[in-house]
Structure formats: structure tokens, C-alpha cells
Length: 457
Image (cartoon, rainbow, N blue to C red):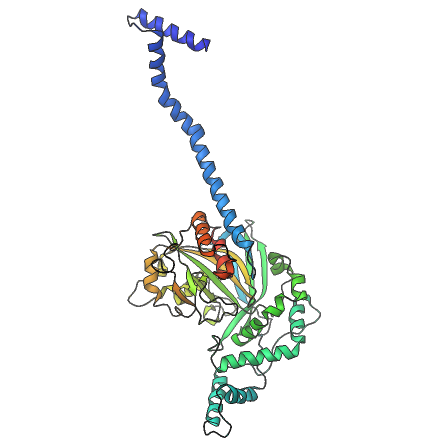
């Protein structure tokens, strides 16, 4: 303080020498008035702004932690792992390769005693007496329906008991009575077009998922698939509860990431697809749908909150120039969006050309049907209303999903969530409340949503 007083006194004397009369107090307040704005500016840059940035980062991290923990700690039928940092499949498509196995044969489960099953349906379900003139007519109807399914004549699968990767499947089919009963049940669903089983087509299951690193030490994946059919998938799906509650499965399943790499069980994960969260950039909204009652969902998913799109990988995704490879993942994701939510028509702009980013964010296993899905975040340069306008033209709209949630009706309190950790967390709180998440949400959709938060907005 003595230095400041000496400085001000010296300055007063100097002013008096040059003919400017000034007192100590006048000089002090003049200097203070000149210096104060610079002092506050300096304080702002050195202390206030860094404090605000720190608090913001802390809050965002807290929200992100809350989103993950709020959901992950309460998932009962989904196991997942993150791919972090997410993989940009538009610019780094080579980091995830999906191929068709050249050495592994087709996996198919064959229906048994078809003629007897058809007769049982006609007598017990259609309630047509064997003496009725319509009896044989109906028998022929179901026989033709069966022929349309192109089912395998015999079971086609590996029963190698010397390899650990077949342990769960081998233990499953040892219970032959139940296995055959489920095969019959699923066949009846197909023949009568019940439980969402309207056709039997080709699917692909994962035979191996190989994880590694490239020259830049970035995570890469090679996924080798095996051909199967929808009937086989439905049979295994109906046995899913027996699988994931079995001691042989839980023995391997300590960590999903390790399970995929080290002890992956063959012939029990017959569904393989993509799950997508779509972010419309014009209003920064996430497209959330409701699960339809028409789609096959053996865990009561109908009416629950669902992801933007979810589609199985099938024959249409095979690369026509390289028959043992699939199209680039971005094309598979686009097909999923086209068929389920955006509906490309001749009169509408192909809105998929407006996609800006597409990241693979993780992988999840859905225990109720044992399917494995790759998760994606997609950003598109349009407004959520543009997606709503095109939803009605999507081939599977109303089948896989019943609607995009509608703010003006049941979801007017929430609306479509914004793509930020804060808004996603708030949306989940509002839609879940104090109940277990799976009461209002499909758990696979929840996994896809929270994995999308690994992408920077």
C-alpha cells in the first residue's frame, strides 16, 4: 500500500508542477476509473470464462454419466458395448467389413411331420370336419402355403461336440421334445399367418466377429456371416428364454465384449441387423417412434418407445459385384431408413441424399430373440417435419412401427427430444418416470439411443 500511496503522491506533485491542481483523492479515483474496466476484462478472461467452461464441461459429463447409468443399470434383456470413438462409416467404411462365410454351410432348421400339422390346423383351428367338402380344399390351401415358404427338407446344422462354441446349441437340442414342439408351433404360425410370420426368407447370422487394430491403432471389425432363414430364426427366438437362463450360456456371458471375441456361441444368434437413431439437423431433433403390434415381438414391445429404424440384414444387401461381401454399411443403413421411416417416392426429393454423418456407435444383444445389432447415429440436413411427411410412404411404416411420436397428442409434454445429453436425459426421465425402463421402452432402442450420445453434436 505504501508503494501505491508514494506513486499517487508523486503523480500529484508532478501535476502541480505542470500547473494542474489535483488532490490525492481526485488523482486516486481518476486512476481507478481508468484502470477498472481493464481490470474487469482481465479478470473475466483469466477467471470467469474458464470457470464457466469448466462448469459446462462438468455438467455435460455429469449428464452423460447419468444417461448411461440411468439406463444401463436398469437394462434386463439387453447387453451392449460401445465403439468409442464411434466409427465414421461414410469416410472410414473399410473399418467395418461384413462378409459371407465361404466355408461354413447354411444353417437351417426343418419343419417335421408337415402333413400331420396341416391336418391338425384344419380340424382344430379352422374347425372343419374331415367329412366336410371343404376339408381337402383347405388341406391343399395349407400345402400350397407351405410350398411357398421354401423350407429345408432336413435340418442343416453343425453338431460338433468338441468345440466350446457349440456348447449352448448342443445343450438346447438335447431336449428334443421341446425342440420339436417349438418347431411345430412356429410352423403353425407361418401356415396361419399369425404372430407376424407372413413369409419365410433368407437371413444372415453372425458366425464370427473379429476385432482388431489398423496401422493407426484404430479399432476395426470383420464380421463373418452365415446364411439361415426366418423359420430357423423364429424357432431359436422361441427358445431364447431357455438359452439365456441356461447355466451353459451364463457361464460364458460374463462380459458381452469378451463374449463376442472369445467365447461366441454359434447357431443361437440367428438375427443380425442395424438399429438407427436419426437426428434432423434443422431442428436438432431425434426421431423416436412407437413399436407396432403387427411386428413379431415376443417380449411385449408393442406400443413402446422405439428407435428411428431397425432392420435385419438380408439378401438385398449383398454386393452384386462381390457375392461374398455385403454392400457398404452406409447403403444398408440407408435401405433401413428408406423402408421404415422416410419413404422415397418419385414425387419427393430423395431425402437420404441429405445425410451428413453416419457413425457406428456400438453393438447390442437382444436376449428375447438372441439377435445382435450394430447401432448407428445418422444426422440428416432437414427438419423433423420432413421426416413426418415422408413416413406414410415408407414400405414398412405401420408394420414395424406404428407412428413417429406426436407432440400434439400423447407426447405433447415431451415432444421429440433434442440431440444433447441434457435433453436426452430429460426425455428419458419424462418417459420412464419411476417405473423400470422396459415398461415404456424397447430396451434395444434405449441401448441405441444412449450409444448415440458418444457422437459429438
